Length: 138
Image (cartoon, rainbow, N blue to C red; front, top):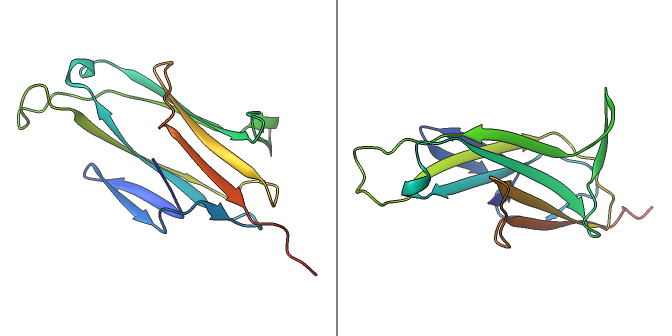
């Protein structure tokens, strides 16, 4: 997983612009999360469900105003991978995802974390922490 300004997937490859930051703002700006998931050979040919949640320093969901009212900032999706004939049996199979976000309502001078869950499981390496700069001084 990588924080970036924007990302896209084409032909199974990730294209990242402004990647690798951990400090943003203080004003809301667009951002993205680029992900490369290695699916175990034995987990191919079946559906997988992923969820990405934005939480604050206390582990609480970050909320945003939507047409449906206040909602947590989270994204979900599904993927299934096939076992290509072109790779040796037992090899992991790549899945690339690019999630682009408009300006998010993040408080200046704060710390946030994106947390990934796949098929109900998570790992300490499946998090992206970042901070927002303090407010502008007048």
